[in-house]
Each structure stands twice: as C-alpha cells, then as structure tokens.
Image 1 (cartoon, rainbow, N blue to C red):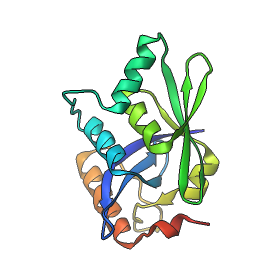
Image 2: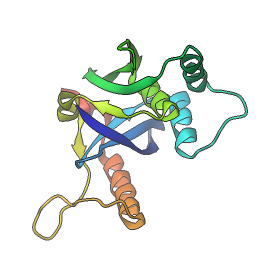
Image 3: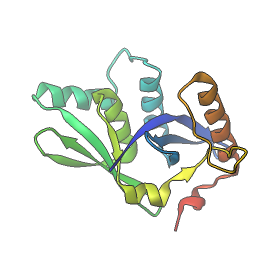
Image 4: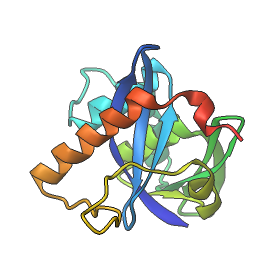
Length: 169
C-alpha cells in the first residue's frame, strides 16, 4: 500500500463538478476523484482548519468513534470500478468498515490518520501531472511555496483538458 496526501479540492469546469486531488507522498502520481458538493465542502473546510459551529457528519462520526473508546488507524482507498472509488476505514482493533472514498478522506482528516491506497488503484487511476525538465525527466515537486504554486498551476492546466471518461477503462 502507498500513502497518499490531499493536494486540494477543486471545481472542474465547465461541469462545476468538485474533485479532490490526492498525490503519492513518495511519488509523482496523482489521483483525481470526482466527489459530491457536501464532501468537497467538508474536505476543504478541514484543509483550511475551519471548525464549524456545529459538527458536520464526519465530525460526528469521529466523535462517536472516540466516545466508544476506539481509534481509526487509517483509511484505505481499495479500488475503482466504473469511475467509482471505494474505501475502507480500519480501526485499531482490526475492524474494517466499507466507505465511499470521499467520506473516508474527510474522516481521515478529522481522525488525523493516514490515507493509504492500494498500488493497483494508483496504477489504474493515477496520473502524472508534473512537467518535464530539460532532460525529459519527470519534474520532482518540492514542498516549498513556489513548487506548490507550480503544482496547482499544472493541476489547473490538467483539469482544463481532462474528462471523467478519461479514467474509465
């Protein structure tokens, strides 16, 4: 399994469909996942550190898990079928619960646990967004502000040309 991180939530134009973009922590492949508006809002709020005045559904679930004395160990993106992503919540006691990928991502943010992905999912749905250097090698994106801006710009360019059908087999 490969750990991934959230790059951000964006709106794909012209359809106005939200998507969350994930990236391998130790690689260059990205996973775009089209999601619902409510999940996009939940993920974006958590990314920005905004705490709503009342708990959202994902906050409630995490609160219930903690109140029952458990902990979410990690979430795992397991597979993609016909453009639909599936995930699991894995608890410290070995319990596994199926989930939509968007909900699992929103819960992982709140539970402060890793987001993992099966290699086969990344091979199927992963895309390389970065440009090439002078030698034609894929550009390695650093963690500084300039690199992050460049990555966002490249992601926007990618979104201008991508369609959901591009990820179907």
